[in-house]
Every structure is written in structure tokens, then in C-alpha cells.
Length: 67
Image (cartoon, rainbow, N blue to C red; front, top):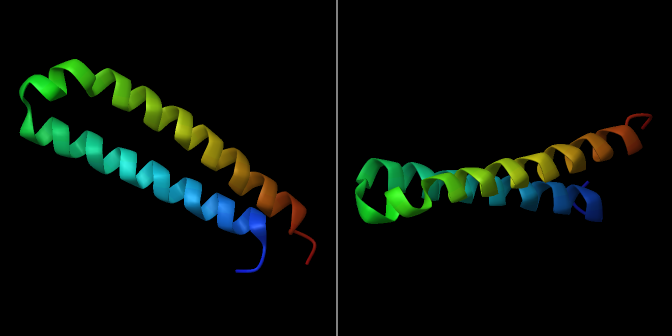
């Protein structure tokens, strides 16, 4: 499975979602000007990245479901 490019891409996209989520949680916890300016933008980026990750994971499962 580690040799499959789609699996690697899906895994990397999930890690990108995790990184964006951590930035969002960190800025929310710290508060301040950065959070006020960027909270909605970070949330939008997370939702978009999460949608891409879900599509890639579903594509991987669909293409490799018969094996």
C-alpha cells in the first residue's frame, strides 16, 4: 500500500488537514489579533482541505475495494 501514489496522496492530504486544524486550535486558544483576523479564513481552508481529503480517501477505497 505504501507504493500506491493515491494512498500517499490521501495520507498527505489528511496530514494537511491535521496541520490546518492545529493552527486553528492554537490561534483560537491563544486569542488575540491573529485569531480575530484569520479564524474564519483558517476554518474555510480546513473545510476545503478536508473535502479534498475525503474525496481522495473515497477514491482510494473505491479503486482498491475489490482486492
